[in-house]
Image (cartoon, rainbow, N blue to C red; front, side):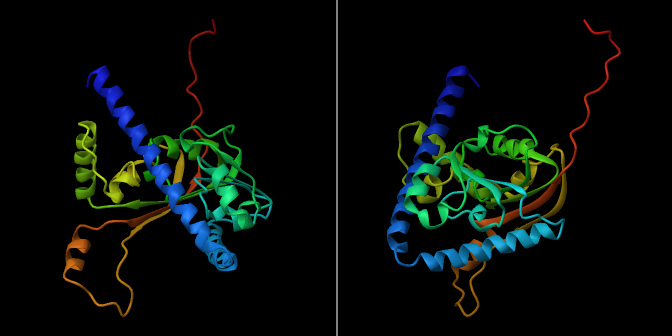
Length: 266
């Protein structure tokens, strides 16, 4: 790949990420208007989800009430706001905007505007790191995962999810990127809202070689609810699944010690 082609590709990725953030903010602004007067309903659901995730982690080891907890991509309704830690923090590129839109719960935990690819924290400073369905909206999923592990202390717990899809959507996303690179707009929400379409294997590969003990991983495909009539199209969506949920729980292991050199210091 030429330098010019690489620059063009990076520019398209940044533009796709910018549009995804704009669409997400517009979506949450509409949700904030609908939520007025119904904050208690949102809070109930957020409490339940946070409690369920905490229970999953506590099957591995207890999480004390003063655990140092970070949620990367805390978003508008993150896990961190009702996770139950006195030393929790959330980060998100749109943190400032979300704090203004949803003060009823955003004020419970400090948040800061930061990209997951470059977290403004020292190494190994958190006991729990959460990242719930974030990296497919970002520029560099592998870079974010590397940062999650970098800031997690040895023995710390990682909870990670991301939507994954059949390989056909990754092929389609690449075709859309080529068309957009040629100046042809493709206004399809599925591709505007995601910077990358990961397969289950690609999601698992994000963790290859990292200092983690993988405790649990699975991929849950969504199906129609009980009582809903199946449609002929359901056969196609079962084969070519979209938005299945990849889920991983891991424990940070100590990083390997640097190899000893036989050379005398300079």
